[in-house]
View (cartoon, rainbow, N blue to C red):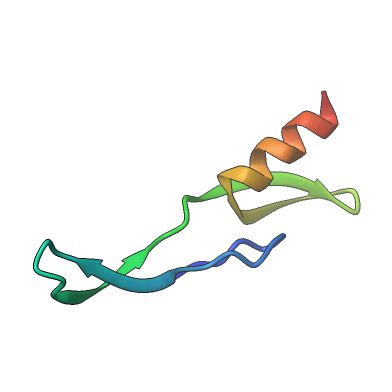
Length: 61
């Protein structure tokens, strides 16, 4: 699974817990998007989580 190239956020693991407290494995996946950013004067495709994408958009505005 992909990771955010800025913050390093990746999949997290845990359990679904039913009413009877029976635990089954599950994963929480981050919302990873591909964006085109200008880095060192070159346009590059990077994989970012939406939180980092929002933060970058705020700093440019």
